[in-house]
Image 1 (tube, rainbow, N blue to C red):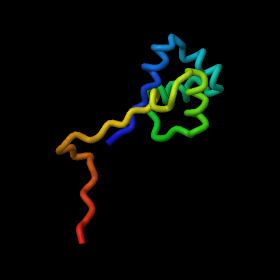
Image 2: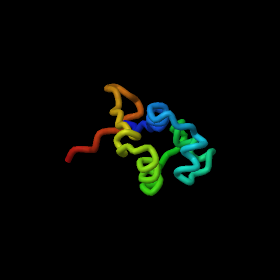
Image 3: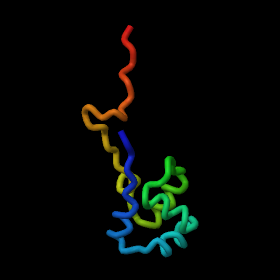
Image 4: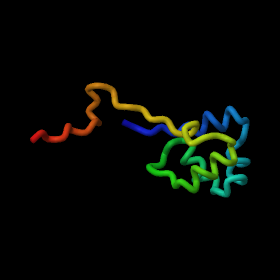
Length: 82
């Protein structure tokens, strides 16, 4: 399973540039770019809140849950029974 960041899609829908969003949210361009490209492993709630406020959206607009495909080797082993 994976959480996919959709910041790039929301930014395109809102026609806002990385630089403009960076200024509105108060996040450095490089860090915002990492969020946009999904090259992060965590997002603080305060950052998510600021992004939602600046983009007039809900957290669900920025985050998407993607379950593993059956047979995906990245899925965890089932819990032992007993």
